[in-house]
Amino acid sequence: MAGAHLDSWVAGDGAADNGAGSAVVVEAARILSSLGTRPRRTIRFALWSGEEQGLLGSYDYVARHLATRPPTGDAELDTAGPYFSSRAAFPITPLPGCRDLKVYLNLGNGSGKVRGLYAEGNVAAVPVLKGWLAPYASLGAGAVVAKPTGSTDHVVMVKLGLPAYQFIQDPLDYESTVHHSNADTFDHLRPDDLRQAAAVMAGVLLSAANSEKTVPGNVVPGRADDSDPFRYKDPSAD
Image 1 (cartoon, rainbow, N blue to C red):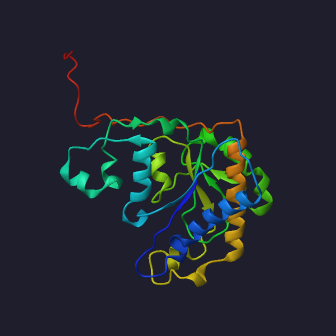
Image 2 (cartoon, rainbow, N blue to C red):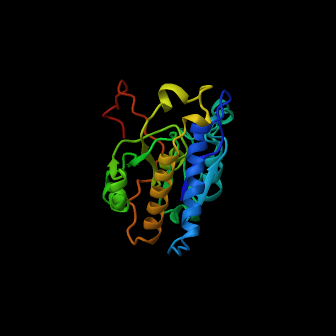
Image 3 (tube, rainbow, N blue to C red):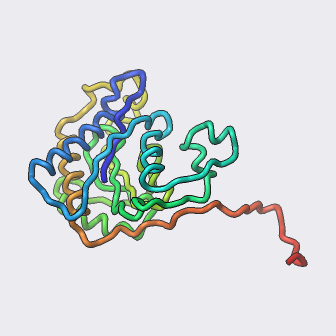
């Protein structure tokens, strides 16, 4: 599965954030369709709404197809939306589709060329991801780093322990100039970089769909134990 958020910031066109990623997802789908590929597994493409309002589109998809969380019981958290309430909403109940998701790839950081994938802290996934990226090293897209990334739609799945990853991209002027500004306009996009990103995304998706290898997932998280360092257990208590 691959996705990007199809919404924008009010001050500009939303070309880099995230029309660029949305265009790459659509182009990757077109490439695979035009080649007549017949992958062993279904490849699904998503354009998420409401990312700028708190990942609302991807949270809704997760709740429908992957896993559910109960209300927290805290009225303030529950009304703030799932981006905030999910931090305290346990237990997580996996749905049947949770076991069917082999990998999710997200593109959410502008028009820069793809350089590889963030493994989102899942070191065990690095060898598999490197293998799927290997054919595109000549395009400059062979890196896999363990660093986790945040603030966009793959985070929803990462929080469930699912194999969801964000592409590494050249930063260009994304954070320095265009991100959430009135300069987020079409002239900040680079067509050649977008073509490269679409080719890499399409190829990695096809490799993943046909591969017998499974990306090692993280464990489904649970509620953290209370770990107040200033409270000590009475040794005489049961």
